[in-house]
Image 1 (tube, rainbow, N blue to C red):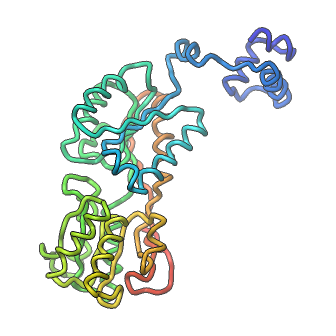
Image 2: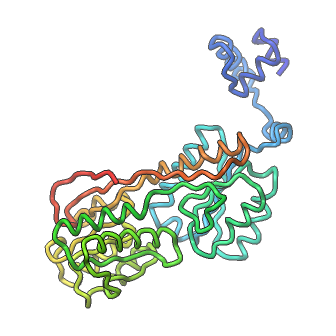
Image 3: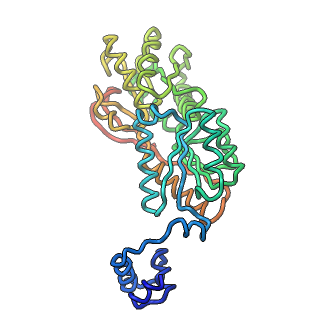
Length: 339
């Protein structure tokens, strides 16, 4: 740093301010210092900086999913893209940890919770009985959960309003004249599934339509589970289906086509997520668009705020969704409804 300062004609402290992106440096001085750094191929020793600052500039993303599910579901790569872009923008490194079993958790937990390796942790969760969040809270590591956790009293999280989003989607089907509206929910131990199922019930109750158990089946957010869930719904003869995820909706529509049903004449479908495949299904899928990329990006911002200012009182950030209307529900023109 002294060599850089001498060659650039500035003080050592000015070089330090430039390296650490301090705002109180003139543009001309900053440019001169950066050009000198580049010409001398000087780079800070990241290990030494971490020891001095007690920060690693590394964030951990913990995904309690199996590896095949993570790469097969377009939701998670999009979420991770938002997280990674935020890490790039704010000069942090991202470490990814896939937890597929209790044994994985026991191996990974000591590493991610130990001071010095990570500055903070993001967890994509929301399953009942998930003790990982409680364990991480006990470690006093800065933590943000993506998705509403069951244990939410003292933990910061970011999510969308799944109850209201599902309510709006089912209400749209009712306005279109559908009366035997089924739902394919996600796994029963998931807060996402519980909230979207609650929105489904609220919409039916508001119009005094029966909540018929024969019209309610469970999937696991995969396409194949949507396919078999729809086959199980066939005897109940629904005229519309609200599906808790686009992947399941694609599988459900495939089952409907195989049964000789016309979409949307015989049966309408609405999904959830607005993954790219929704616009290219046959017919194009009406769906609830949630800002998946923004969920990831904003989660990093909340976590960095915790790291900078200490673990603050828990924050709950709820992002808006939008109903994207396509032809799978019987409306041929496309428009968006803010939720």
